Length: 310
Image (cartoon, rainbow, N blue to C red; front, side, top):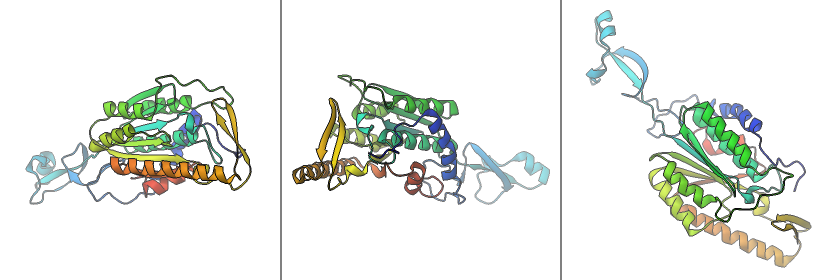
């Protein structure tokens, strides 16, 4: 593992990402022309909640929107226009479990998971959306219901910082019935309002048939995106060298030059990739991958497109 790897994203780090989120959002100068909703507000005119302007009445305008004061003052019919708000609650699910306390380069997967979740939270709040989250490790699962308040967002960031494993501290033993991705997805079904925008940030290392069912149930009534955090070693091993991997009973050494080990590793990775692809395909979840060496803001820029929109 490289010596420069970022092992932990602190609360201060996650708060500073507000500037990166603002930079992601600023490039969007064009108006939304479709009827899609998400981390944005539609500019189509209608009887929404936000007043836009008054203009002269045109045939076909809703007479209920006539501004009688302006009409009387200008001696010609004028009507109010409104900017229709197309807000949806945004729910962020952040996996900070033991499998994410790892990296060979860039940052530990748990740090990237916290950073990506924080960026999405800032983007949602800047768009005027309600934002909430579920963050979990192998011992705790914290639920913060969606709200449109910076104070609530800061509570989520504090939770993300706290639930990461701190480098140099002994790992806490997993609870026999402790939190995992499936339990977080089950809780998300209870918390999410129909029509929510849901992002799941995880390495998806621990899958089961229940995972597919839970994702499918969430995607049936919500827009769900899976952002997979991945390390280069999960794709390809070096062709030679001795390496150590942390295990529950201490470091486990392996020889990357051993052809039998290489073959077993490739078979395991291939099997997992097939299982994961089938899980996402069956559940109807949108997917993308962010690598540990990627800059989180730049990686999200590629995923979200211009103006921080999905």
